[in-house]
View 1 (cartoon, rainbow, N blue to C red):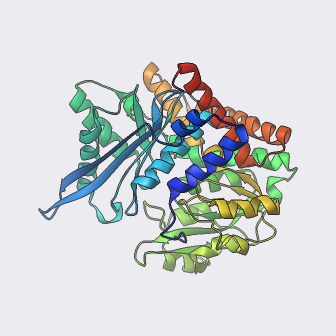
View 2: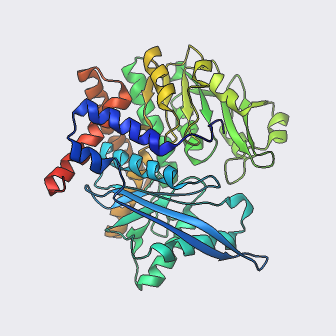
View 3: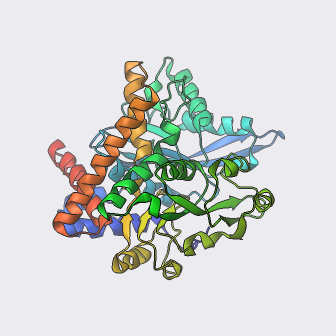
Length: 429
Ligand code: GLU
């Protein structure tokens, strides 16, 4: 990870918010209300480890705003998780649900842990412990968690099971990203990555560039990245470089093939956390480069799909002059300093909470299907997802053109206006 340790994502989220609040001319009271989460939970999760010892893990849930509906957002398992990261991510979820125009608010959760070093049983205990601490404060009408960095459908099912054991009933709407056949929606796994590409497709149309004439470099090889690559290739694009985390060396590497990486080939040599096997990649003819090299490739499109704080004031100048579009698959990958350089260079940015809103939009579909107890086929899910993402993109790009705004600013204006209106109409501010 190229981010520096002094970086505080919550300060960044607030700085982005303040800038947009100025643009809108938001009144002081609403501004104060929206720059701070409504509720925060911090707790300890004691876990009996496989070796008989007890280890205590720090857990978080932050509910930023629920004026438009129950809070919604994932749970991250990450060794560097902090309350400020979760605060920032919960605020971004509020804007994400608003820009996607789904009736949900913003929340986020986390546990400071590294699942690489935990057995399945230990991970199950963390999931159940997280729910035991929060069973009174989440729920289908209150706050609905989902998967995120290093959490998956199995984790969601353990959490659902614990919640239902405590509440004594079936509550499939309490969590999304569940396995298909256990209340999950077809397409949920693909949704975030595909959503990134639906918005990228619209941006390419707007810029009158044919996808088949483009190349891309992608940071990360987890769930978001893999499905973004899949759909981008279907549109005719060529991914020349991807980067991934190397757990053994605790660093990242970039994997390059000039004529385009082969997704299936790479998936075949990748662990469950998106870590590509270096030696096997070399055997398959990949150039193995330092991880940060994903950023300096001579491509048309960059798709950061790993973590926050990756494109910064320090490395933004190394981006090739040929880069025309940055589609942010990750949450908060670009710092404000780097963003100013994009803006000034005329790089077209599809901002994170618009580009990656496909995941939560499909989570919303999952809730709808769970409530009806009637599940749609893949075509229906992806058709509806495409429609929602395209109209979210259109609302933002329409405003950007009309008011001559940078795309990130336009996305903030759309989202904050919707949330502020909900708060005002409820009589909160
Ligand atoms: N974790 C995903 C995100 O950052 C999805 C959240 C959800 O489905 O609730 O958008």
